[in-house]
Image 1 (spheres, rainbow, N blue to C red):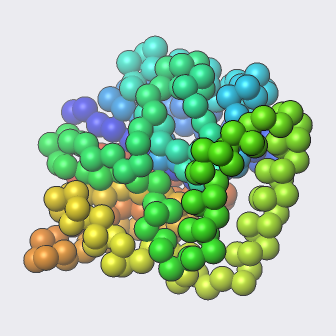
Image 2 (cartoon, helix red, strand yellow; image 1 turned 60 degrees about the horizontal axis):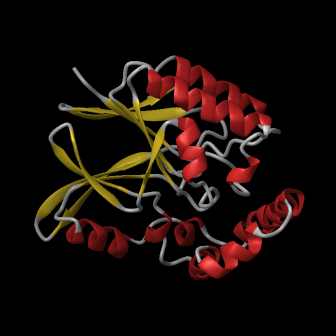
Length: 240
């Protein structure tokens, strides 16, 4: 039976070698044999631009994906809030296809909406303002015009600021807004929904306009990796 697998929120970084090790074991193990691997954002802790592709970690990840694709597993990559500057050069070296957020697809016979998930967190107004700023083409161009080292320093500063800001926010504010979820499901024709971002792995069922819609939240890899396996019989969350 053909199947697809989904991951997100690995937040790969040189100082998190254990997550990197788990990722490469996953690529050479559970991911092999899948029809497709979908990466739904925040694969990296941050991405300063495709001209940093020869960084050892970045190069190894791209090579891992390329090997997987060469062996018959299609690789799809959706931007997260941490790696939104991943571009065509990374995709080409990885033999991956970039996905728009959101993307509606037929997944083994079930209409399925794929998202990173951050657009559903509408109660976090501070984050949504930053999201708009970070996706502004002019702001991106100014950032990418800096030397690679300067971009790394700026990203490290933003990373620290983000972690500090989270200390003053409730878990509810950083989670999805139920109304935003229902609107996304309604607009897409009441599909299944798979997303990451919130770091709250779970299966939910939403009743929208009298229709039941399944929502799967992917897990972060800070402590223990996990992935979602989906086939024609449904989806199952699996810990590594």
